Image (cartoon, rainbow, N blue to C red; front, top):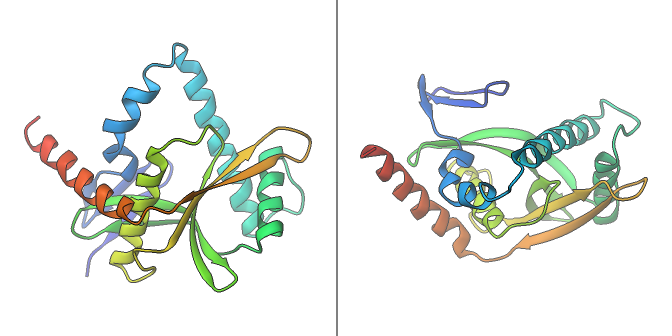
Amino acid sequence: MTAFEFDRERHIYRLDGAIIPSLSELLRGITEPIYSHVPDQSVVEAAKIRGSQAHLDTELFDKGEVDHFVSPNAAAWREFRSATGFTPTHIEYSTYHPTVKFGTTIDRLGVIGKTQWLIDIKTGTPSRWHALQTGGQALALSAHGIVSRDVRRANVVLSANGPAGEYAIHLHEQPFDVNYFYHYAQVQKWRHLYE
């Protein structure tokens, strides 16, 4: 049996004791050129902190561990859930792909009506690479039979605008995102063999 571990504090995934790359690490070939052009890198760091806080707030809400909202982002998440009827089945769920060998943490997997949805929570500007991210997550989940590769995928972008926050849903509807991520990840792993 395969032993999978995730050290959440250090963000390190292990498979049978060996460190494996995260999905985010595999996507750095796409994300670093985008974010390295931001003149003030403290803006990027502030966005990471804001995103981490929003993830914590929404996780506590979804687990029923808070009855009030400490941030407008968490209030926006509450509004998304109320408006869509989204019910989470997996919250901050860590998993891996057994053959591509990468780890990932799914923000939310759940249902709206009878349809299964993979939701990635964001607090910044939507980007095209987010579809590859959810494609990779769908690939990992489907390898374990948790979802089919064509699970509905979306970003829910939370905004701190206004006292109750706002949200926007960005659908990832291209079925080839999963295959593109698979091939991209294989090329990234090949590149690391020769570095």
